Image (cartoon, rainbow, N blue to C red; front, top):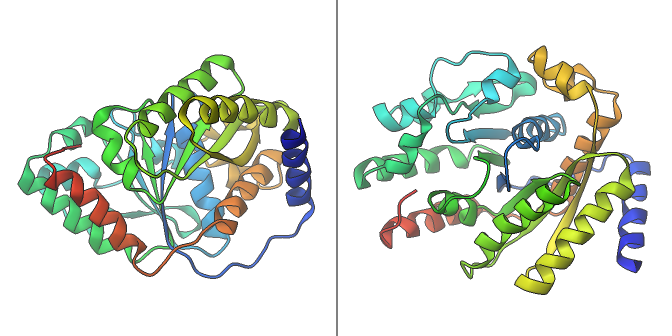
Length: 294
């Protein structure tokens, strides 16, 4: 109860504080969920926009296998997608599109399952292209597929930080636990933050986080950090129908304010070094050297 009260007070302080000024930091983020339908891709996009509006150079890469929809949420048709990078060895700089507020993104496209069937030559090309662009951005967000298959592990485990999106529903919390368990059993050092989407109020979000955090700590000895809650809001559906990010369509809403606070949470905790992007590629490459594929 003391921890819940502490979280509540911290959230209240964040709501009251003006936006902070941050030094430049680079970070790779893998956004995952235990199941589909929790709003992961929408939050990935709008969080990327919030970071961009705070002056950061952001790249959003859609790796949601079979369900890539970032371009649909933005309302812009892209000329090239990640499928073209993989199948045609298209350079990253040709696949990257410019979205609203200057964010850069690469759409997933259809048939993205090809990504998880790369041979060594294509895999090496992909790593080289990824390495060539990472240094140009402050934040790179990977919108991963729902659930967490073995083939997705390299990207998630190589990221500087993992963002787990869940909702207060018990089934969603258990799905999030299953995904975190899958990660924890690898024995890797993990930095995980939890976003609780579709909350009725702050207490709702904190309660869901405490349940998940308590279970994860007790059974997996893994610490979780609370990124914050995002309210349930019909404006999300309206923005999706109009193919406009809700952060831009409804900038003064509680919904958008919550996402700006999520961005603040990421900025406050960023501890990047000049070689972090190289470290990300090194970690990702190590899976190939051990004979693992995506």
